[in-house]
Length: 339
Image (tube, rainbow, N blue to C red):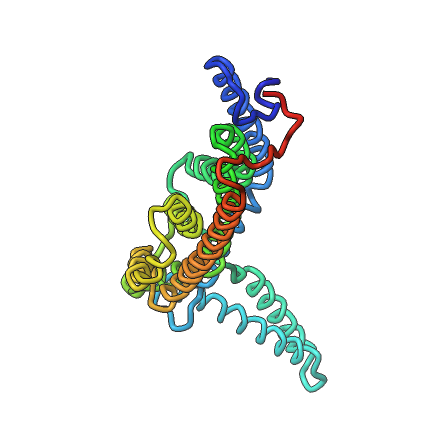
């Protein structure tokens, strides 16, 4: 445990057993963090499922929908409003002095019956997915809670992974790798948030109302949550574009100039990826392309700035070396260091 928790420097020499001990301890820490997150998410599973059901709200009771189930629900709500209006009218008639006591009593009875009928009508609410199997409510909830716990524990998991891998990097490599690794969780969460608020509502609305006059549309919970999680995770991965671009430019595979020259091909690839995501109408496709293009352009700009910074640092180092006489060595920056 002590080996895993203490910082490991690049020049440290650990045995295979010590590496395995460190790996084991970090895995235990990850499992403990995941279990804590899982317990918290399972405690709040109702809230998590409610959050995942919200994108369905835009697809329910769409104006002019031909879905028989939605038309039935809309008819029930219209009936409820009619009953409430009739109850108000019946109570007004029951208070009229122009009618006999017998008629006023009958109007009052009609008002009570109409109000009771209106109260029995179901309230308008957002759609919810259905379950078919005996154990599906438990298994689907368990799976959704697991993904939510994984997302919640992601910072801890990534930190443990970084802490195990980074000592293998030299100080120069660490300067390049550390910022890129720190960007991963933030970009992933940004992609998930963008997908939840912009992509999922439009995709579900398009798919659930497509040709809906030919189907009784029932949405199974297992398939619906699988679809949502797939889209959320895929957008989180697509938002890693800056990390990939900065990585390939820093290791010298391509240059920012080459990326600028091939910008049109990158935009074409982004458009194809946005088109291949499920349920994309043209408006939603453009909404998905916009942030990816912005991330791509911002990554090129950042890579160019880093290259200029590295070039200036290299030029200064060469100038300092050239300033010394031939055969002279630069002064030792740490004269007290023992050889």
